[in-house]
Length: 440
Image (cartoon, helix red, strand yellow):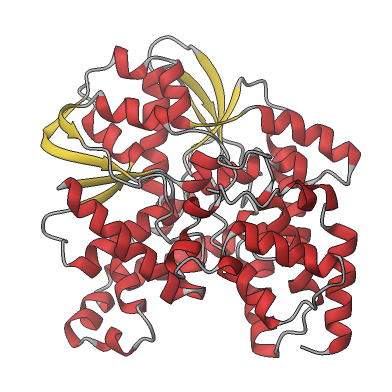
């Protein structure tokens, strides 16, 4: 890294990192046991939240240079934010991490292939729904035309680098082009209307994971919700915010705020913890723009996970839920648990399903190693964490692993494939399992 770039990054750290927040860290170490990378690196201090905060503060104070080692440590963080609930000082570690990553990415001189790739993903793909649909349409053709079967039989996928072959097998069957184009914009509650909600459909959730969205909408209707689904909404911006592209994340946040703020609704509901964690922090994301911050606050106050709505409306008490005998366990979505503070509602719903035995997994509150695109960019660490997670999954003897975030769902499916458990264990989203259990 050139000296001029280092100086730019240091200046950026000094201007944008909240010094009071850096000072709030008392170095007590309460965060250490909760940090997956600290555990996986044999308790290497620089790979812990406390260590990373010390590195950031060292750069701000001019004591150390922002070199490749510091960038490496910040990139290796999963951003699971498991350190925040256990921090006695209430340090907003996630905010510091996002800001530091953004400074580094914006000041860093990437090679042209990396620049092209980042531009395509962050500017040309995720912010544009029609392009995401086209990509998934191509994936649909690949899966349903026989091409996928050919590749599997010939084992050509084994030529892919890393564990992309296993990733390919973990992908869900995506909907057809027509299915993706015929999405509802309003759904009436079944029977009595108890709540008026707007549904945040997301980008990947309404394409690759469309069946999970459909299951969620069905549950909300059954619970008594009139549901509005604004067409103008788009990607939540979480991928951008976590990857050093905050400018685009802010633009996406503004699009979503405008799409929902004119609706006469009680709640904004979604089913993906990773998206929800950013939605409820839109006010922080837009804190430097007073007009937008106020609008973002009103937006964020209404955001809830669908499991919270179902519990509030007593869905689990008013409906008989039943499945064939099986043991079920739950893997928390880190952002749903640590940022949205939702952990009991999914478990209450699972325990309400007749015929199932709920077995709490040891360390269910710890990250599975997915973390957005972390399982692609930091594959070795991600797989170490996943392999440890699968040991705990097997201890539960569960036939069904349930989670509440698309990234976690893919990661658990990947874990099942890596362990060769495809014939005896499945991974599903909470909404899928609940929809499957409804007896109408």
